[in-house]
Image (cartoon, rainbow, N blue to C red; front, side):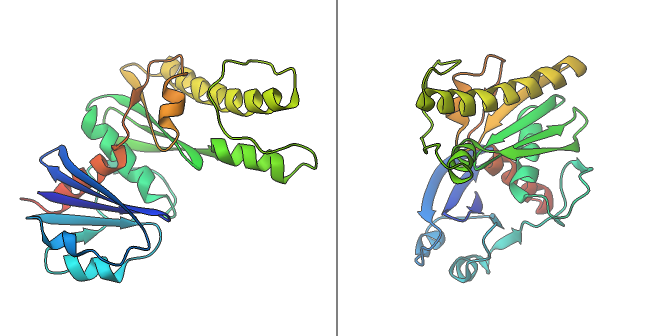
Length: 237
């Protein structure tokens, strides 16, 4: 069994993979100090990915097992043409996961979280790069932070196209703006590529999956799938 440790700023996610299937998932606050449960399962190998620094309590529990720490220098089962060493590791893992789930496809991976990332990987497993845009809540917060009179609202499901009051105007403007952005990326790449699919993941994926008109595949555990594939690629059975 493989253990995938994906540590963010707020939570740490633990995924137990048997082959390519997730058997168990545990989510804990990043500030957790007790990780004794890590010794209770039979684990063959581990990958540890973090954006907030390595947790010494986790390292203590995995150091005697086969493991790797995921970094920008880790060998990948794809060709990475992105030029920056500062690329988010979640973006790399997501395109690896997409290529694993949908081999021989041209894929646009859309990760809708605090930021929205658009990443493209070809049917030949070449990651060509992507774009970064403000996420849904960030757009709401920006209107409130950088204007004097516009109030802060939370995302909500609605079908309003043009608002006739300030609240509806903000909600429709923010949400439709991001929706149209996503749909245009899908349309633009889809028109230039055959054998093309788009995947959505991230914290706000469920919100947009319901309203995007284009065909899109939701994969909430895409990063974990990619990390599992990277682990298998670097540590053979």
